[in-house]
Amino acid sequence: MINIRDIQPADVEAMLALRERWLLKQRNTWHTTERERSWFSRYPGNKMAPALVALDDRQIVGYILCALMRHPAMPGVSATIDEICIAESHRGQGIGRRLVEDLRSQLCSTVEDLSVINAQVDHEDETAKAFWTALGLEHHLLEFTDYLE
Image (cartoon, rainbow, N blue to C red):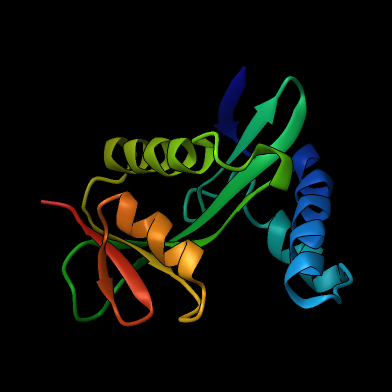
């Protein structure tokens, strides 16, 4: 059974390993650096950078990272999904959808003036575009948007 919970500091190394395996499939080269480790380490406990992990038993099989910001031209707070990653062995089981839905629910209940959720994707990544479209987000060039009303 898959459980979803907030990221904890002890999750960072497992998340980096999961990301590295994904990037090796995408680009054939990747090495976790202190910069990536530092970037991942900013999420646990950071109210402006909510993040969730998906666990199968106690193994991390997916995660979603987000950043909140107040946009100078838009009212309220906007959330940008920085990254979502699911272990290859666990794809197609709805884990990505659950992570997005749980994050959206958490954001809507904790961020008082949340106005929009964005997810940026590589314009050549048809799988990612289909994923965000299936979740009902609107496609705007390289960004998918969930307008909260």
